[in-house]
Length: 588
Image 1 (tube, rainbow, N blue to C red):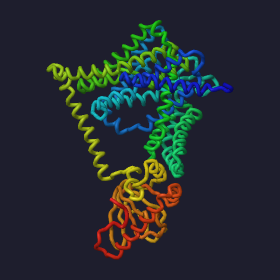
Image 2 (cartoon, one colour):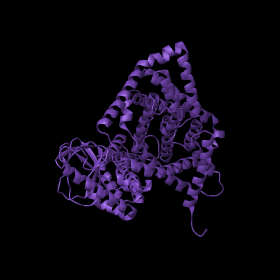
Image 3 (cartoon, rainbow, N blue to C red):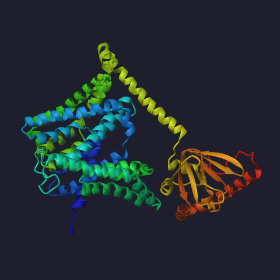
Image 4 (cartoon, rainbow, N blue to C red):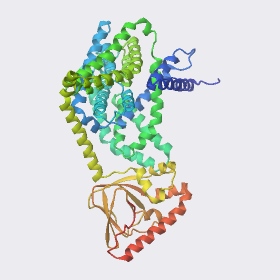
């Protein structure tokens, strides 16, 4: 061809083979992740330089950013706190013990302690994606045992985020060729280097959690007002990748950490659900490129040249980690069935394993053989994971049937498990009570309740939702005053208000709306509206509404009909007198 198409060739080959191998893996009832890794392995055998590994590596960096952005976007402190008594100590101790076992295994092979540390850390963490897929297939995500397993892996993920920050700063001390130069901050002093690194990362985190929640949601609201889905998606990606790059360029943190906190910051925005939906396709696409690029680094010859090492590492992951988790859960006082599920959940390695192994390789800590070992064991352990869950289920059923095992396995941990169930039930009840008192409705549900918008297509509603702006009010705060200019409609997503019109007091709650005459006629306000509770609203301005009508002129006739109905209703209320109990506007 007359021009270089290396990037196009890399993407085309990666996506096509990932689809083929991923589909085959799914048909074989294996996680598609296995297929993506094998697609990368297959690319390595293609003749010629069809796919460029350097380009694939940079695309993989984008995959890591978007992957960590998704983790931060869905991070839930509440889910973690519900199972903290078992997930927090269990996960941290399991990381320490599994990492120590990996270091001893690597030392036996003559590796440096730094290489052993990277190998051990890579093997100590499991794949959250694989776990959630396994739990979903068994309808166990919302069960107490499933919540424990998910919480356990959340702790592991957070610990690995910290490792990604510290590993570059300690690479030189751990035996890698990368070390601080005399003229650089730290001057080769480990503690000074660590201190400076943590200080810079701490500064980044402080700025992210204090400034981010103020700036990022405001920015998204301004973009949303344009009504352009393309711009909104671009804004989400700019936030994710931009913050990740700034964290690395200005604060010396990793791309992964920056993307993670970008997701955490954005999760506090009322538009987070929209951000997640818009970024998910690109997140999935670049995550596939990440797994394919990891597979491209795999050297299958290790299966022939070092089968003993592969078997040893696989045994550590599938049997060793499972046994460590089982013993820890039992030692913490929980039933054997809970321990068996936790063991099965950890009997594999995944995303963070690849990231850590690649980082260790780039800093000269982990030999190429180590990366190949991690990749080989990842493919094998993920493939075997359904068998691990099956074996765990069979053993759990047997333990219940056998009197001795039931007495020493299940009954022994019944008390701790019952307390956990009570805590989960109490947390759920608290959320339900809060939802009953402060019922919160999303933008899409509120739009469906507004008569004018009932006939909109899903695509039109999606564009309209982007125009909403949030507003909050304290009890007693006046929202609108009779006689004021009418230019905004309010949709109540949480709380309640009191409408005073024609001498009557009318209460509106979550799901109701008021001030819509401002959208329909632009006339003066005909009622006073005051918040009676801590309330949240979604506002739609007349300017944004008129812009929406300009794009969808078929709605103009309905606007006129509804304006006439609302005007007649308000006139009837004012004429009927104080006894009439009829809403001035809005709908239940």
